[in-house]
Length: 192
Image (cartoon, rainbow, N blue to C red):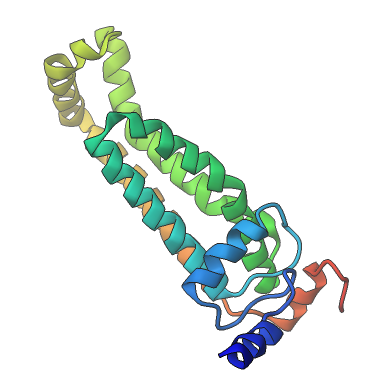
């Protein structure tokens, strides 16, 4: 058993190199070890396993929040805790595909823009009705939103949804691209 473990340790690449064939546990561990490293590269498995790990913890905290209201701070705390590590692994994944890390912003911008477009009719109703307190929302907002949708806001919401869908497709396309040898230019050691 010790030889199998030592053989596995010898095949683990350095932290600035992509780890092809990585498993769930190794990817989640590597995500936290490399939490602030934006240089270097990450394999597809390293990115997608780390994303699954973050999503599973999200679901756990959201379920716990449903039963215990005090877990709302844990959800937000978790999101803040993994924001930088997920951004770092996203940038490294794009580096492995020989792309600039700035491409990681494109799906985020699309999602935020789509959400803003979807919410704009609701914000218009809230401001027109002068709703300030959450207790005023129940009946008044529902009637106001229905009026807004009858006035053509459905198209606005659909445009926002399509923009968010395009952002998801772009996200999948960006992060499933195969690694390229040219991506070595992003390595810390400068291997070219």
